Image (cartoon, rainbow over all chains, first blue to last red; front, side):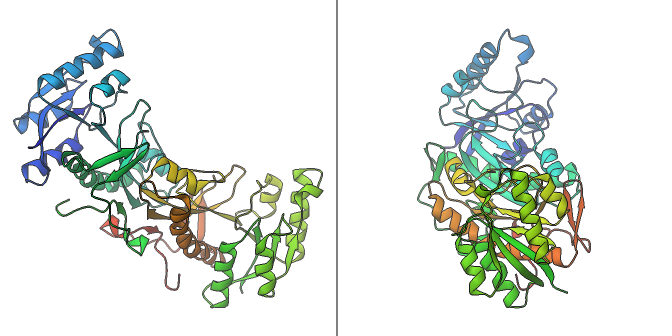
Length: 224
Length: 224
């Protein structure tokens, strides 16, 4: 049975699109029960409607507290039958009450090799720092921003002095590959968490003997 | 003319050995004028003597201040005719007075993808965090620990729950390749610094169109 998911967006939702595309192509065994946004004008909601997916806006500014907002989101997500939550550019910190409603079932993607460059400007911060290897990270969400156990990371070369957009575009290309892969692993029930360590079951093959051949780790599987 | 360098060690100095090996094989156009240690029993000093390289111990505990110790190091390095300084597991922070004596000519290697995991336990901290991509960084040294402009980084896959030694060994294999490469670029006068950004001259070729094919960036050149 397809994994019933909710995708949360605050903006354009290009990662949402990559998930929709993988579902429609039959690669990703998930069903988006709803796309939820805290911004009624988020383009991600339009993407959802374009594909016949329920789109709901809940404006956080209309709630008296973070807790009330999160409770409303939990109700809405459950009402649509979603059991896992995929953050795709959702710019709100979630309360532990929200996270406890979906234990081990809330994923986020961040455009940096965490723990480097957490926060809202991962690509820009990496470009400013002058890193030579940048990347992106899919992780389980915990109460701290961009902090939970890592599922998959991808690294890309960065060039000195290149701008945020160029580097960010190269990172985004990989985001669109690793996020559907991570959701597929979740759908397959293959992610085992032990403390901060996330093991992919069945036990992963050994890394390639030439480590420089591997840039996406765990390696992408067929179709991703 | 070969670049006259001093290599500073506090311990085993396996990165020193990789530099010695590349020099002796004719790949790296440098000459180690001395190996200097703040610990008289550092095995790096023995490595130096085994290859006929002057080995000097200056015990930092015998100096009244960090400044006096650094002044003694500068004198010793200059007395041996070295003009660039290569830190290879040298576990002391350098004063700005030391750095000003060799402007843009002090390099360090760190076993993590900086700015992730600075400090004395890069590999262990990466293993504990549960990163999926770990690595190493060669950078120019500034007054802050593991902070200066990045020259080259290499990324290796990490596996969940693997121990520090296994991951550290995989990282070390790449350290031994990227550090001699970085020193060679320094010897060739090809490193241009603009703020935090280090450009490799002549201007670097574009990254490969498939970014996941590149793991060492800038790409290693022939012989490294």
